[in-house]
Length: 149
Length: 149
DNA sequence: ATGATAATGACAATCCTTTGCAAGTGATTT
DNA sequence: AAATCACTTGCAAAGGATTGTCATTATCAT
Ligand SMILES: [Zn+2]
Ligand SMILES: [Zn+2]
Ligand SMILES: [Zn+2]
Ligand SMILES: [Zn+2]
Image (cartoon, rainbow over all chains, first blue to last red; front, side, top):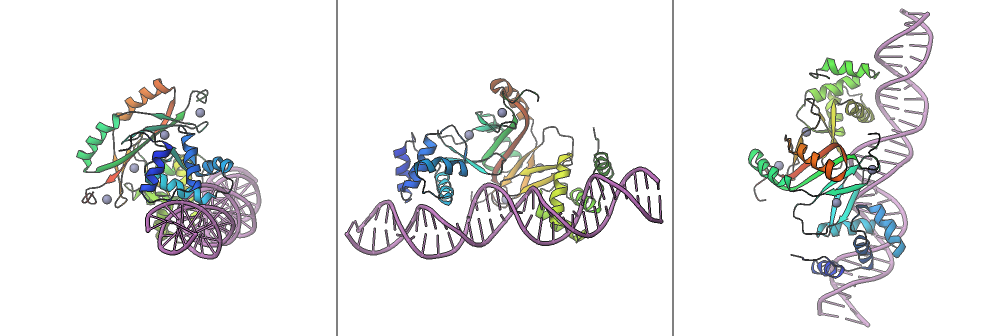
C-alpha cells in the first residue's frame, strides 16, 4: 500500500481519512519522525512537543496518538510499566517485531524473528483460533545491567 | 521444590515466609483452588470471596494477590483489558504457558510450547541480553466468535 | 471569504490500584 | 490464659494514566 512513510505521505493519509491537518498533529508526527527508534509514552511526547509548541495540551497528545495508531502510522505497546508506549511503524511489517525489555534500566531493544509464523499455524489447527495479532516480550537484563544478575 | 500445591502446603509456605495465615487469605486462596482454570481480576476475586466472607475489603484482596504472586502461588497477567488478572500456578513451570485472547468475547485459553526456548538461546547470543522471563500472547477470535472475521 | 464541521485546551471525571491510618488479630512467650 | 508485638485489616483518601465535557477556535471544501 504505502511504500515509504514520509511526512508528506502521512499528511495525505490523514487528509484521505478526513482528519484535519492541524499544527498540533504535525508537530507530534514530526516528533516521531525525529525519534524513529524510540518507544515514547504520551507524557514523553507531551514534553518533547512542548518545545516546539508550548500551547499544546496533554489530551490532544492522547487523541493524536490514538489516531496515528488507528491509521497504522504508530504502534501502541504495553511494556508493563503502567503506560502505553508508541513507536513509529517503519516498514510494512504485517507481523511486527518483538521487544527485549531491560528490568534494570527499562531500555527497550528490538528483535526480529519469523519463528512465530509456524507457531501460529499450529495454534490455528490445534485450537481453532483465528489469530489476528501477537505480542511477544522478553524481560531480562541488557549488557550494561547484566552484571550481578 | 514444591511437588503438589495443596491448600495445606501453601499455608505452610505462607507461614515459612512469616506471613500470617488469616481467614481472608485462606478464603482467597480457596477461591483460586476452586477456579484453577480461570484468569481472575482483583474485582472478580473480590466478588467471589464476598460470598464466603462479606466483611472482606478490596484492598485486602489486592494485598493478598500481591503476596500470593510474590511467593509463586499465583501468576499475574496483563491481557490488555486495563486490569491485572491472576491465575493459579499449577505446575512448576519455570517458563510459563502462553495465552490466546479472544477479541470477541474476551475469553482466555492457554497454549503450551517450548519453541521459545530455542529462540531465547538465539537472543542471548545475538543481543547479549540475559532473559529472565517472556510473555507471549495471541490475539484473535475463538471458534465461537470466529464467524464473520 | 464563509460556513459546516471537526479539533483544541482546560479541567473534571473515570478507572484500576495503592497507601495511610487506627483498630483488630494471630502467633508466641510468659 | 493473659500479655505481648508485629503483622493485617477495612475504610477512606490518594495516586496515576486516560477519557469525557464543553466552550472556543481552526480547518477546509465551497
Ligand atoms: Zn539495562
Ligand atoms: Zn518496537
Ligand atoms: Zn470468543
Ligand atoms: Zn494462563
